[in-house]
Image (cartoon, rainbow, N blue to C red; front, side):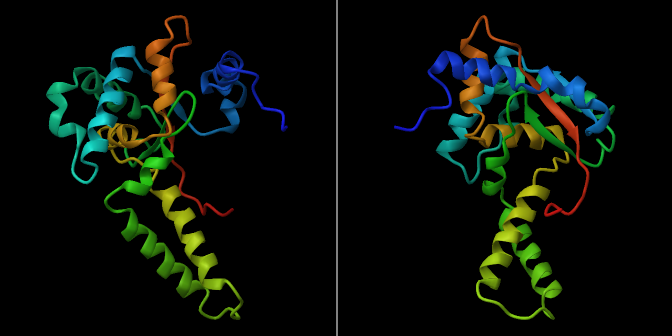
Length: 203
């Protein structure tokens, strides 16, 4: 039997807590992207989980900002995020968002404009490779490359509203939000806004 990475839930939580960005950012700050930490109150984590539940019921149309009166903690979080992005390098042009433990990168795939962005990237790659010799699997490779590029660029958030929508749609961060809500003695969580630097993702 393969050995598990963690012996149990307690060890997993310890390893997860040790990997929180707040624990190591000071060590890499001068070599990393500009970042701002916005406290994620328990009430906001509760509302993010509820927003996720509601979004899953009608994923094609549900937008948290249309119901902001029902989410006062998220509205306060949005305001705090908007304030902090002003101090972020390039924050007015867009930023990357994550929570302390991981990013909501799974949610970009369900965005309304993602297919269009992916198709644009595919067309760009086709134009670049037009003069290259043909090879087996070339089109599949281009499609995977386009998906990778599109999913990277789609993480650039133009507003705090859209960043909260992205977190609301993410299944990837739900367990960590539950931990934030349920562990009274657990570490404090943050929403982390990071400078988004445009670069070729394949580099």
